[in-house]
Length: 193
View 1 (cartoon, rainbow, N blue to C red):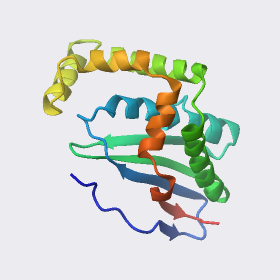
View 2 (cartoon, rainbow, N blue to C red; view 1 turned 90 degrees about the vertical axis):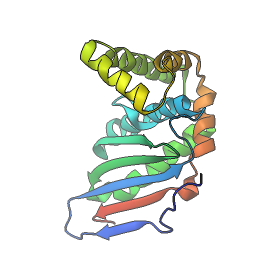
View 3 (cartoon, rainbow, N blue to C red; view 1 turned 30 degrees about the vertical axis):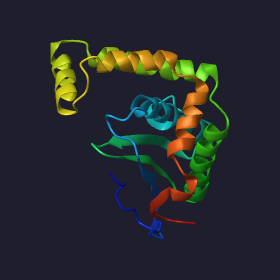
View 4 (cartoon, one colour; view 1 turned 120 degrees about the horizontal axis):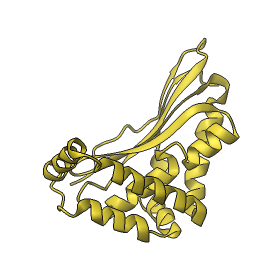
């Protein structure tokens, strides 16, 4: 099934007296919940911006101080997904933040993350899976996800196995395969300087 149509242009909503800008950068990707690259996409996204210790948080929040929080996500659907990066930044950092997001994606596409960065992500994701299955009420949600998404009953064991075996270059390859810098759309609301 083809990917849904996307806007041909970026969307900018200028608010001249705004103190902050809301930034959303993203694109549809050809991966779904049954796709062979599903686990790798989750792992790559987590490393890029999917948790508090991610690359985007480390560079854009901690190192550069452009924002309090920046995150990337992949919303998976039955036949496709949507990759997004979201942040709210001080108005004067709007363009610098957009440029740095693009730079970090390109950097990860060209250079594999370090073993240390991979280990942090692997430990985080493994802990998330363990937390997801801790207790009968949480296990209820696990079974609901397995049933409604038509996953194999061994889905979470397969995910844990992939977390253990994924290599740094696999992350770079997934980002190269699915994220096209030229196709990333930008939606910015605020003071665009």
